[in-house]
Length: 54
Image 1 (tube, one colour):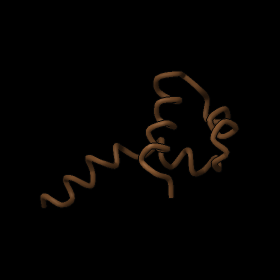
Image 2 (image 1 turned 60 degrees about the horizontal axis):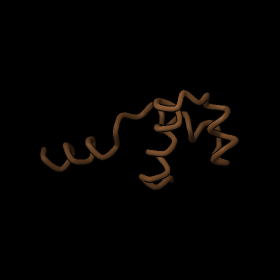
Image 3 (image 1 turned 135 degrees about the horizontal axis):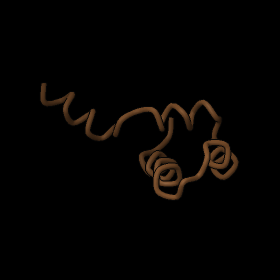
């Protein structure tokens, strides 16, 4: 499991800097599937906040 800082860094590289998934994998050293998993998920912080409000 990745820390929130690592997840934000991956999303920043992908969405803001326009890096490809394979480039992110090489830079971070994480598995391809791990990077894809966190890119496909919505913002984890907000989903956890809404989960507790129910």
